Length: 352
Image (cartoon, rainbow, N blue to C red; front, side, top):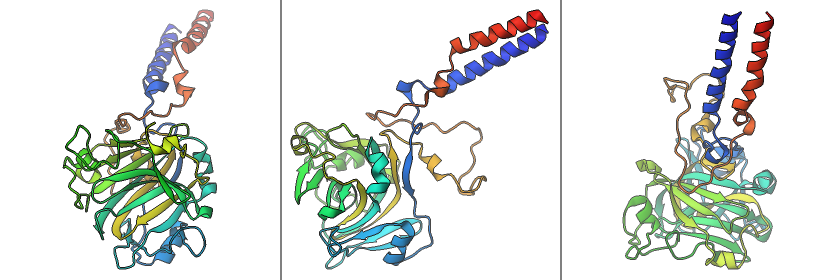
């Protein structure tokens, strides 16, 4: 019986140690824990060059002046090419084109709290260096498009703004995290400098660069903050824009005041390019992105080799992001919880 008691004790202590190691404190939550994926699209479909069937397949909606949901008629053509969405609008007569990804109803639960939008973008050609492809938040179709927009231009600058009643207000302000900065000669740096290490010169410096844009939307903040990663060259996420109290959007109190909640793709004028891995999730931290690509079957896909160990890959949290807390269930299993079990085991062994 003593051997049984010792074995039982060892088993309980081992369980305690294993549980303590796997339960991260709330202030050191692991990325990806506690997130709710609202939407994820990787465009893994057969190649297709027709906009209408693609919109139907994606359950997206073209917004237009004729149906009073946008300020223009869409001119952009959509295609699926090699598992990415290709937007073709760099042509004569190409104007801003809008396609709704998620409507108010689908975004309601996320919009009521904090949420994040993330996507990959590769700009391939543009009519001029100010053109862009963006994903908008808080879009309101009934006003023909009041929305929040971080539009990253092919020249390596951007704007972090709200468009309300046809007027633009800017959330960030001149300084280190000012998206519209175009001067690298002072103590601040442009987006081109931050992610490519090159001084801004007005040319199409982002052409054919695959970047990942992350837009963090905190409910009680004064505006969004934005991170960009030079994904094609193995870069890390860099904070490029943060709302400030000096920004027009703050003084106008425009954050979350459009009256809309929709997520919308915008082709900003004469621009061609790709987007991929469109992701919307609750919270403001960094998800474990590999978990979002789990195959439909239980087998390991041929393109993704199974790791040699069962340990989850380690993902470094993004600097200056406050991660969501972990679930408390495992964390509450502490040394105090084990004492009654050990005592009970001891009493049983004595009685035997």
